[in-house]
Amino acid sequence: SIIGGSVAQIKDGKVYNTTFAVDNKGEIVAEYSKIHLFRIMREDKYLTGGEELASFPYGNTKVGITICYDIRFPE
Image (cartoon, rainbow, N blue to C red; front, side, top):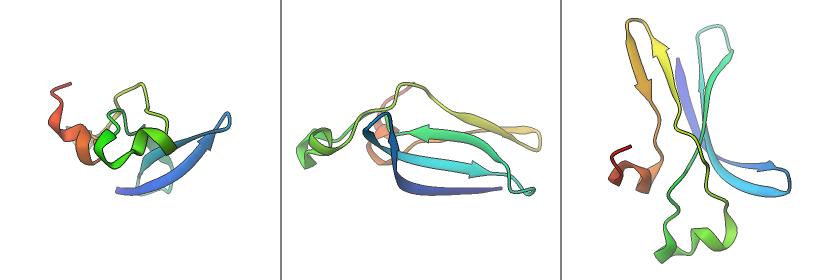
């Protein structure tokens, strides 16, 4: 599996900071858009925050995805 990002993803005319997890078959198994935008750097001016947490199985382990500032929040 590979976790790749960040990618500026446009959905419904809004821009999200998104990361994708791809399995060994090339299938996207998870997609995560950064939830907590870093207002000091004015990310909220240009990006829309995501709304859902994302995880995917890797063998017998469940892997969660975060982007940058999101790591500071317990959910």
